[in-house]
Image 1 (cartoon, helix red, strand yellow):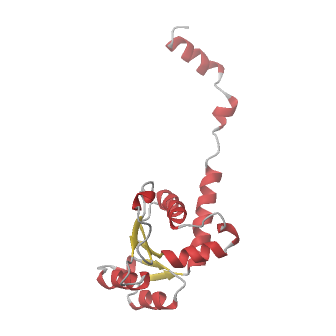
Image 2 (tube, helix red, strand yellow; image 1 turned 90 degrees about the vertical axis):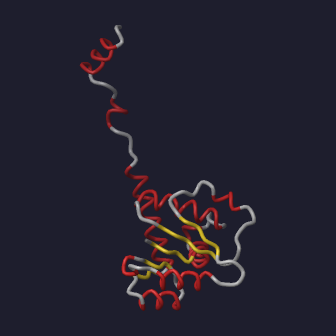
Image 3 (cartoon, helix red, strand yellow; image 1 turned 180 degrees about the vertical axis):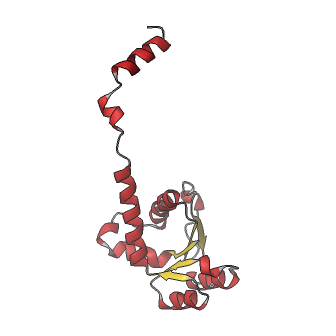
Length: 157
């Protein structure tokens, strides 16, 4: 399970040259959703504040759980609470560049990744997905003569 400090990651993304097109929490979550769909890992992201009034804008996100800290807590506190109640914290990874959260993760024997490093992993994985989506040779070359004859027979032509 990967728990992400969403506000921290969004700031890191916006400061990176590869993240200029990601400006909102929704855009970040949609990108993370593609990453988690591809990797099969479980992910949660926690943002500061209450978030947009209409949470339906996150409707296309299915591989990532999204939380907002509300007005009485910050995302760091929510993530620390998640670490404290985790029954197997050694299986968690916390993504944040905040020293406070990385220390909290280490205190519970969880892994910690800086936001910038995690974002580069996300981009690398998404880029490798694109390179793996090449068309099969059969699509470019077409059917062999024997395959064509077989399909003609199947359709009685």
